[in-house]
Image (cartoon, rainbow, N blue to C red; front, side, top):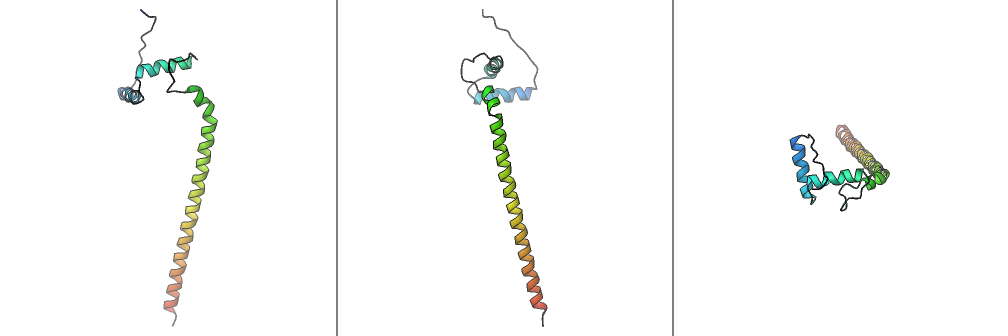
Length: 107
């Protein structure tokens, strides 16, 4: 018999079920993913390519933050542009309305 330890832990039943379903959709199973995760944590090469690319995630964190910052800047610019356009439209509408009322009130 192999020298393997049966590990048990407590987790909310709905979370465990959701994780099992996620693993299945990923083409694996919950136990295999947990074993692979532990192997990567211990710097032991997994038997197949990891679904949890820990090194890649650590290396790309700055890139991901930069990407988020860039998207945030684009969103802010878009919101500012839309607010400015909406204000200009409202001003134009109210000026036209005032001009129309002014013309009607003149004898």
